[in-house]
Image: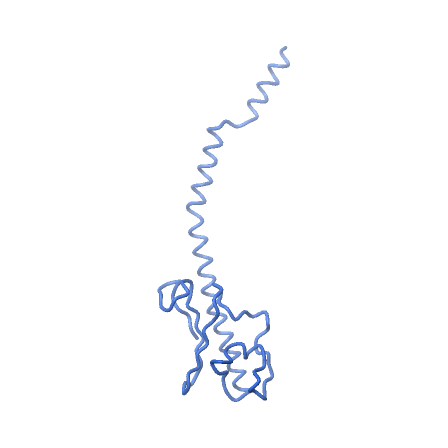
Length: 144
């Protein structure tokens, strides 16, 4: 009989009470409440920095394209001309970007390529996190 009591006490002492579990869950929730917004801010900043790096890559590829072909791609040809040879171009020595280089920004929207008649340089734009023209901070437009 003494063995049964000892086993019963040992089993109860080995577990956790409901109050202890609730305290642990509350601490985990508090840490998550404080840490998640900070981590999400890093993610958004990283996307903005990645978009800026992609814009620099586009500008370098466009410069090499211009040297090879004698001009920049038209708005109709767009950035796709850096990956696939346009029909209207004879001296194309690309691809100027690898196929793995995305033509869309880190938020999933395609980059806007503008090269209006009479312009000296084309402009490549990402509308940022909000995907709308204008904006501040991480939602600001990025262009090169």
